[in-house]
Length: 308
Image (tube, rainbow, N blue to C red; front, side):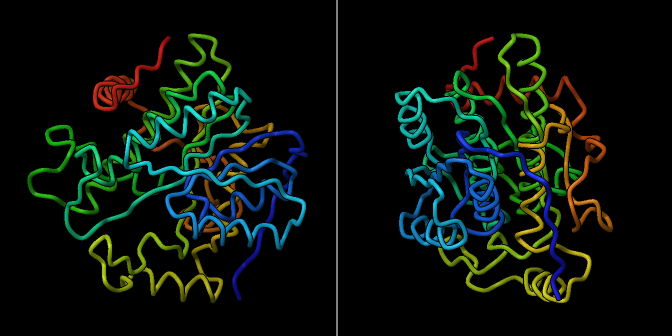
């Protein structure tokens, strides 16, 4: 049987949470857990139909939840700007921005609307631009990295993988860049007095749609990996479930014990599953010079300058 876990979440009544990638998988479970604690949920989605189905699932569990669907495609900087402008016009503080959405290992190189490699665009640049535009409203930012950020390196010589595309290496590169952004956000917030707490989380391993069949992304069938992960999860072995995997981000975002610039993830075997706990920051995410370089390059590529 799948193992179940939960954590103590503070009363979030009156708090506003924006969660990317909340239309399914881990993101949906993050939204559901925050809604149960009383938070108002903003769900920016690419597919309105998927968003409505996800909202209905949350409302089944928490009938009085406040859920608001908005349109957002992180692979389009114009879409990011439009979404951010809506929230800026409303002027309400964003107590929790959870940068959870992601794309993983398209079999062949794909480009975003702006011409960037799709994983780098979605996993990192879109979230960088979103946080940058929303900075005046932000209170807590939690960035969902991956155990893949503990391997490989940033592909500085060809950030967009226009030569010799390697799907897994490109995924790791995007997640390392994203993690370095999160640590740099905390340093800059501290230095400039922005008042933002920036934490990092990772979900371990869990059966989600990241490795499922996605014909539009060039993957006609489920991968062997996701089939194995589903079986292990169903048997309660080693890996987590979407519900348990969501708790790392929930803890990193809401726990009064979570510290900016630190990483939280499952504490089970090899950090693949289990309840959340603080973990040693991956060595690739400790390089402050690389973090500053990621920040500068991201500003250049997105055209979003995050003022000091």
